[in-house]
Amino acid sequence: MIFALLFSFLLRVLEVKGDCFAGKCQRISLDVHRDSVQDSEFVDHVFHNSVTLNPIQCYTWCIQDCRCLSLNYRENNNQKYCELNEGNHFTNKSSLTQSPGSRYYILRRDYGWEVM
Image (cartoon, rainbow, N blue to C red; front, side, top):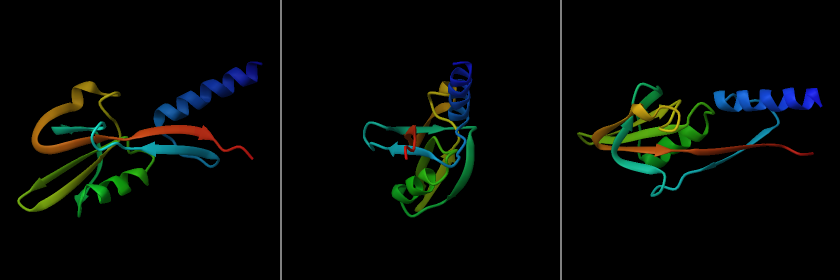
């Protein structure tokens, strides 16, 4: 019983940090209408930025890195920019700021255990 409670607590701590490890399954979803905010960006939590072809490429990079909880996408002078964030407006509400021309997207990651 004590082992089960301790194990459950450790799982929650690891999920909050977003650690990736074998045997853990995740379901990632993004609804481009419901999960985005026009003219906004998430600041001070960017761990990767690059020029991109389109928002889909940015999303693809994000889902490949377990640290990515949200992304910023913007076009400026015919360049398209992608920023991957290790936080979101749920973890740091004050980091979501107004930024004309930018779009903030949040990923919804649901975790579960692989059953064999």
